[in-house]
Image (cartoon, rainbow over all chains, first blue to last red; front, side, top):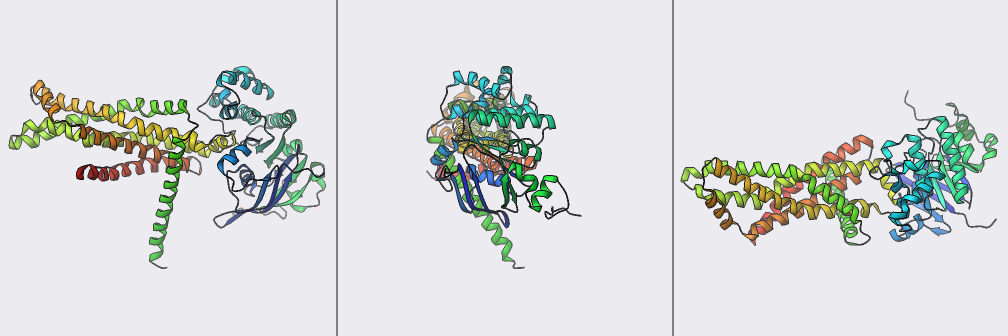
Length: 257
Length: 257
């Protein structure tokens, strides 16, 4: 397979002050694949995602999207690249001054791919894709529960038919049943829009469900990656400790006694 | 420890902040003059900053005018110069008290709300979400607020001038026993276009300062609720101080002319 990967990261470094967060991340995400990055808190998962999105600029290394370098590009190029992206934020990050329908179609309106008259109907259509009724469209985000906000966030992420969708801890803060609903929706909608997916999570149930391939980030590096089926016999002590959630093992949490 | 170290650190910090602020305001102004514009948001901000500040500004102005008439009577009656009260009131209000008092009051009202709103958007990742939805947050959030600040402040101050002079008139006529027609004639005779103009130029500058400080501190806030609180305080305090400093500079410019 000689296809250009959708996302290609090579030797990406990022430090904040004296703290090294990314210490040479190498990762490929191929077309149509769903990759999940797992890792503990503070291992640089979010920073990895934000570097790809251009919200943070890495200190060194390369990140290519569809074979095109995206580090240090101008804002108009960045905007063009971001058209390919959809993102579901951890806290959904809905705009609380706008009703649900305007949230869902925000990207389409910004790119002038629809006018305000049609936006309401399009929003209802997108909301239906994530299993929400039409009457939600006129509510404000603050009137929704956490799980519903996540679903609206998902509808917003897929509204502009992105090539690549990013999921930042999609199940954090949800009850187990709602978490499973969200996982199912993620699998369904990425298949429906035919997108490539890159997620970060520390929820193993979620990772097993949505991933084709899993990569483990530890101390700013990808220390293991492979198909999700192999994760239980990865032969990597760090991965074993993480997926079984044990306090003892090679990963030492910085806990003050 | 080297005693010069802390001094140097403070100085470098000051330079850094100044640099950040200047690049922030350049970027904000650039986006304010370049399309695409967001007329809907500009209008909403104008209503927020202009219309809803009217009660605060009106009350401040009417009492300032009333106090001014009383106090100058106390002073001028000692050397039988009561006739100059109309002159003093109209000059102080239009040149100085109108813009400065309105500026300080609105700095509290608008500076705080801008910083809190944008700061909350920052910590809940809504600003990041804007970027992923092909919308430049500087253009969408900051530029409309700068435009609204610069345009609405002079209008507010013009209204404050009228109400302030009216406050002086109330006290002079009803408490100090001046002849109403004479007082108004005096006010009108002493009033020059330059007095009002210099006040309005000040107002535009103060409006810019207030929205800039609110946006800047909100945009750069970090660290959850506490960070937003700190941003709000900093926005109001820095806006007030900058208003008083720039007031002197502007007064001197108009003075030497």
